[in-house]
Length: 452
Ligand code: NAD
Image (cartoon, rainbow, N blue to C red; front, side):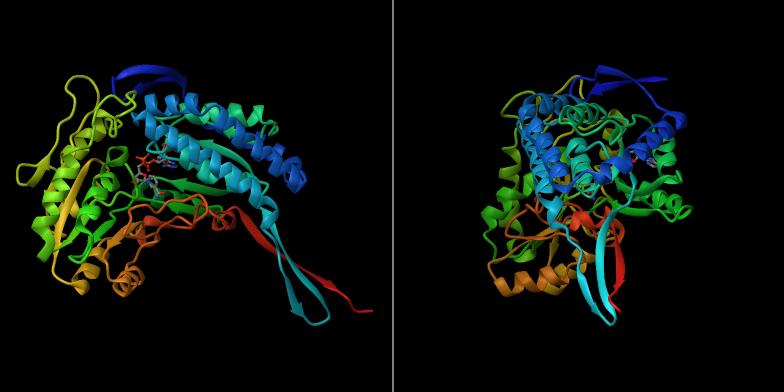
């Protein structure tokens, strides 16, 4: 069966792709399994060289990859170029990490005890549609650096950039069978990878709901899993913050990628005494966002991914919503939704569930204790921000928040060299940085007797 891949900004089909079934998935796993012994045996410096070549090829094809991603996801082209730049950085980082991920020697009686970081084997990588190439690279980089072979399953709606990346991996000299991409449904291809006895680990990014079923499915073969799931992060603004700066940066922290960002700070918590002043700044900053054609260099926000997703997002802004601001969005074809700010309480659905669209809930709070309580009152724990000029308070609150990633006087928290991942129902395991390697290797210890 073939399925049309759409451009969400025009609703036009941009490709028609065959959907793989269980048989094709099994064939890809078999290719990866066959390629594993030779790939793990590649000398570390040579593996690093191949990853460096892949990074260079991604850089060379930056514009092409950014256009594929922009047309398939509806991302503004300038942002898409930045994302492809990060993909290259990820491969550069893990090329450099290959020979810095060491074992240890441990003092024991009667001999020498040493540890090795062994690759796992074939790993299944399942990624979502919001940052298809970036999230694939966050898993591919450490998986390949550790000597694993992979089967990558892109999301149904956004398979194009993964297919191109697999071609570039071959061009870089990474042997056939090391990187396999299988395009198909999550419930078929994804599920098969999760249950396949020859797949050692699943690196999954997606919704908490599907993550739960991945964890259940993986139990059958005691498969390792890392889960990067949903979020409902808080952007906590204290009255003593630089309010103008906090407000100027808040729209991008929730409306970037049209709000389809697991790290979206979609609950903006504002201290009551500064509420009115902050809202004035926030509305001004939000109204300056340029929403429109993703191919235009000046566009800052494009459409949502699909008609169905737009319906879900719209369901959060019903007649009872206390709207503080609603922006403009293009008319006509495309899955557009305007930037929307809603005054809310933390009990409202809009503050409890992941909207995954350009809609922010603005929630007032009284003091520090209440800010911490409200920020933590969510099943999620992925990201967040704190804005204050009081350094001690910033650190107190940062330590008290149940979240894997947090930034102070900034909304930026994803970097190639630093660990990324969630607490609570946002998942477990860390990607990026040296921590990312732990999820794609197993520690083995070897005891060598020195007795005569
Ligand atoms: P999704 O969970 O619907 O799908 C994610 C992937 O899982 C897709 O490739 C899909 O085909 C596959 N899948 C679906 N059913 C499956 C099954 N039964 N078995 C195995 N695989 C299956 O998520 P989505 O709608 O593509 O992406 C949006 C979600 O991803 C949001 O909740 C968002 O917060 C989350 N996300 C998290 C992070 C993070 O790093 N924490 C990053 C980006 C997106």
